[in-house]
Length: 213
Image 1: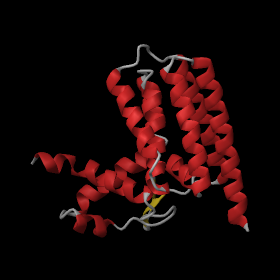
Image 2 (image 1 turned 120 degrees about the vertical axis):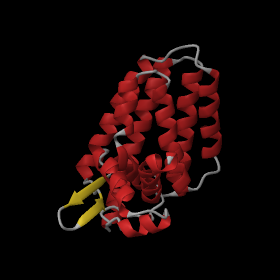
Image 3 (image 1 turned 180 degrees about the horizontal axis):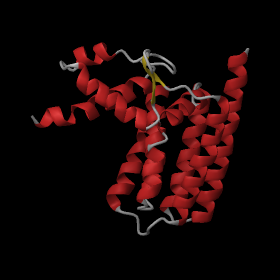
Image 4 (image 1 turned 120 degrees about the horizontal axis):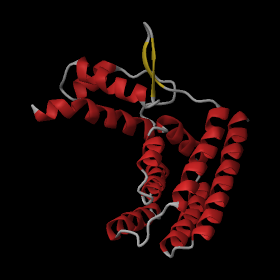
C-alpha cells in the first residue's frame, strides 16, 4: 500500500515532533514498541524511521542498548552558531529578486504566528523562518546542509528560547531581519543577522550559566 511505503518517514516526523515538544528528552531512549503501537504497525517501520534519523544526526544507536536521542555538548552547540550563521550569510548574498510572492507570503505568515506562539511552538517557527529565508537563495546545497543540522539545532533553540523575554527579543530580531530582506537591503540584513547571531550566543551562555546554579 502507498501509505506503508511512506510510514517510516511519517514515524520519523512524529519522533522529531516529540523531540521538539520535550516528549523525548536529550539522551532518552526511544521505545520502538510505543511507536509501533501508536501507528498500528510492526517494529520494522519504526526501525527504518530511526535509521533515517540516525543518518540525520538526531538519533544515536548503541549496540545492545537501543536508540537514543543524541546528546550534544556545549562546544557542539557553540559551533552550530557559526555554521548556521555562515550558511545564512552566504544565502543572503545569493537572494534572487524579485522574491516569489508565495515565498514572501509564507514567511509573512511565520512572522505573524511567532507573535502569539508559546515557547515550544516558537522554537519550530524559528527553525522554519531561517529555513525559508535560506531557501530564498534557491541553493539546494545550503538547504540540505541546514536540514541535516537536525537535533543540535532543536536543542540549541530550546536552550536559547527558555524564557518569555528571550522569545520576545528573538521575535523583534526576526522582524527586523525580514523587513530588511523584503526591501532588498542586503547589507543591512547581514548586519541584523550578525547581531541576531551574537545575541543568540549571549542568550545561550546566559542559559548555560543559569542551569549550572
